[in-house]
Length: 461
Image 1 (cartoon, helix red, strand yellow):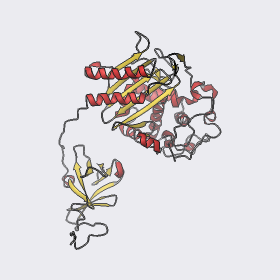
Image 2 (cartoon, one colour):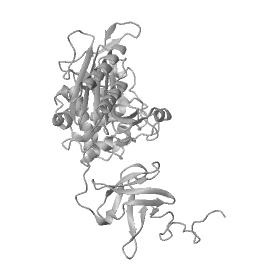
Image 3 (tube, one colour):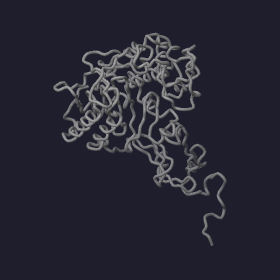
């Protein structure tokens, strides 16, 4: 994936560069590098550095911390899609004897397994993995802090277990499986478990003085599936394009949609902040825009990958400092700048090629009790049911091939919609999960639950 700086307007490029310049200066980062992806291609790259004449490009490696978890989640979803495991099964079924086997695979992916956030001391991010060679060393004597499945509690050891699960079911080291099944097919040649030149050095910046201290770059050993990877903005831009649209060589678009769907019950503070965790991905609301991706940090490095599927814009931001710039905010701003300055051009409207008269007959206005709804039949073959008031339950429905449809989103996800016909073939009503939708409010000619008063509608007098 090459970067074409001409794909964005000069004014847009100037605003993008200004945003990362402010982030690097105010966050006091030794260097900061970023990229923007649109329509699956890198359309902008920029960097700022404290070293004159030595700005990093899209091939310089930085440590990406917990973005590694998204790569591990992709490996687990591949196993599910192949039928090797079920996300609802307890870990014990596939990886016995860990002491944390009651948590399901899905719970580990969504950080709802109840496990501790960190491994026992000493701090795993700043010590070699040889300190904790076995899973028991990672989990400690009391791995659970909460009941499994009850709450979101971010857990690095949980992703260590998922990495061990991949190794058990593939019969090969996590690093080897990742390279063969994800990095190579996607062409991520500059993503690795150990630094490869050219790479940035990690630094701690003193909070009260403009001086720096080098950070150690440890091999995390067993903890690698939770945060080991090094990568570049070039490679992560390719990965962002994959997360948005899928690649059947690695993971389908449908499975990636599942990964991008919230899977963990958020805490009250998360609800207020517009944050939720999915299956190896985070989702945030920023300025009315839903952003999916992941952040990462390890001593000496910060990282963020974020994308707006609706706008088809993604951003990658990397810095080589332990703390400083808030990269999730920078990434959100880069997406917003491009989405607002150069909004996505919609596909041309095109009519249906083939019209099913039995579906077309259903289009138009319906009532659930007294609330009005519109059923629409679109060129993608889906039908949608939307409240006329603009507020209320809505969903699109996919045809099942037998005259019924299945809900794809919202309250009606998985629910079945069907048209109920009279003996003469005319439509009586729509049935949606036992709800009766009629052509008129409380239509006396339809089987409205509870019946309709025989005196009909009336005024007060």
